[in-house]
Length: 130
Image: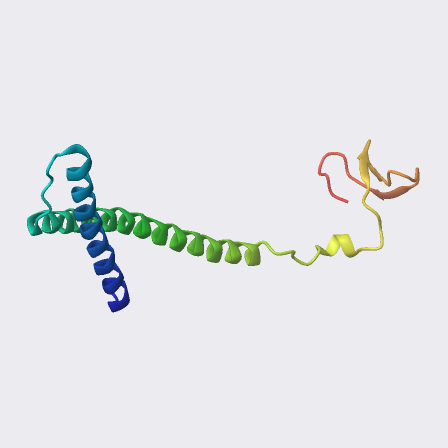
């Protein structure tokens, strides 16, 4: 723990102990009831704080570990997704798409262009060869 945090924490504990003493005097004056503030009370307060701090550090440490693991998984997934995008990046068009002839439809053994009734090529009905 940093020195500045330790000093601030000591100041808070001293203020709590002093204010408890002040309230005990006030309680004695108003309610005529004694409340003793002893060094043992102070040490119990500090030990209770330490145990609570340890418990919270454990909880937050577990969540931080889980978060680090999740962020690492996201980073790995991003790298894998990047590799997948490179793998599935647009490939060059196949050679037949670069031909000057438009795609044709097969109709009764003949390949016909969908917008033109003229025959583009003849297909053998049984073999499917052009």
